[in-house]
Image (cartoon, rainbow, N blue to C red; front, side, top):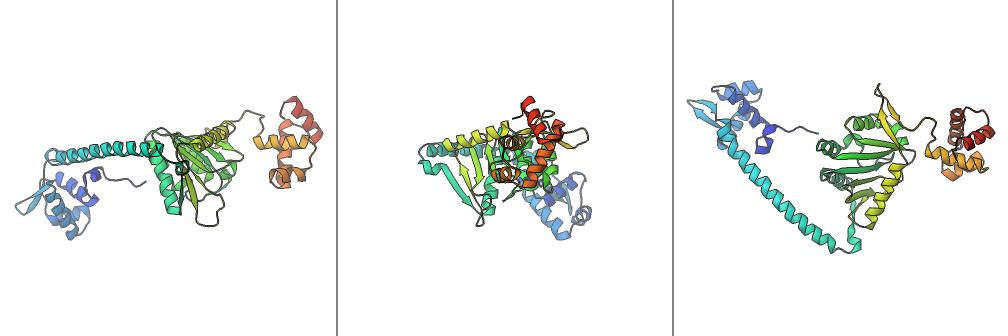
Length: 328
């Protein structure tokens, strides 16, 4: 995020704030002296001084410029901005009340809003997070459609305001460039992150009252997303998140900063359970791969991993160990 200057809220541009600060540190100064100190041009320094005089922050004295008292000059500006913010908050409360009344009268079709275009979707995605006050919940697939983790400045802003984040990421995301650093940064910032073998959809829910999700993960046309307002559909999406969260493994950062999941020692991943169940049912590797939508090599690799975890050499021994350990 771009850091704004402290006095920007009072309407001062960076050059004006820098000029005022320089004047406050000097008894008096000429335009040329200020331009040299600020490493700027004479016209730029002169324009900044004109603005400061118009705001009552500077004055001329014998061909030189002096700063007005910060207390006397800035207090009225602070008071003015505070009054403006108070009026804005009052108007916000009025608009929110009108909006709630309108939502109550909406037809069921109006509870779902379709937005199209990369910029519009990105804007609604950011608004969802910037307006959250308590919690943001997210399901993150390995497919990036509009906003990736590194570009999500609204997330850092929300976390800075005390909004909690609960995020489930797809394991394949950790294998992509930037996946692990982004998750590590989220954990360092205090977010709760879990990992699942597969995440059903990309989804963001703010304060359990508003959600956004893409209409299709592989849309070839103009990207589109659905914004869901309070409704039975939102309740279903919340239930989907809760179920996905419950079956995902927590991620943490080890003492060396490495990323690790916190599943119990010897525990199987959910997808391993599916492979094992089909294997014990008598399906071949090819049939298991076809049923689960993965390559036969992936199935064989997961079976081999389970055999190593069980400390056995044959699939028959794996079946016996699975029964003893209650894996299936």
